[in-house]
Amino acid sequence: MDRNIRAHFEKVIALAHARVTDVRVLQNDVTPNRGILQLRGKHNERDVWLKEIVAPSRKLYSYYLLDLGSVIVGFDNYPDLPALKMKFGKDYRRHLGDLVPHRHGKAKKTVMLTSEYGAEEFLENLDQLANS
Image 1 (tube, rainbow, N blue to C red):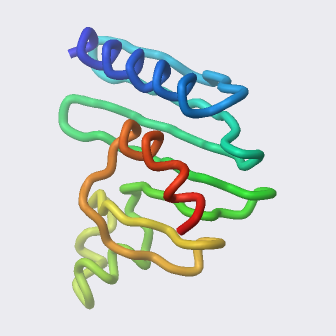
Image 2: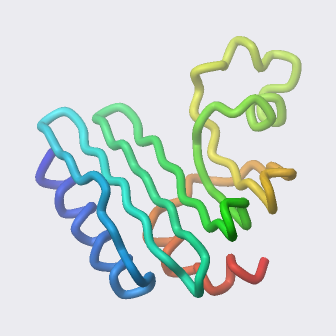
Image 3: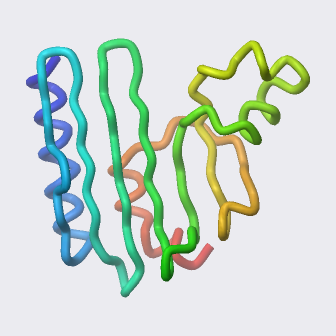
């Protein structure tokens, strides 16, 4: 598993260097049981934040484009209450630990359920996302 995670992280880092300026890898730590990649960079003066935690049974991720600290757009699969309520309705309390892929809009004022989103997809679509 760790070989696959390393290869994936190397691919993401290379793509970040191609699509983003001032790339800083804050964490790239892979063990046989899990991997963590965290990086920051700039895209047209806006901040790019990317984090993935990969384990055998699940992958947590967050990819954000920010302007002066405020979210322009973000994708993550953390169990945020608004996303849980959208997906599970009144039964959301039974799913508090479930991962729910979703998109945050400007200043995190909107949430929309999505399918799984990947770091490569996020980095490839930065121009389009910046204008959404």
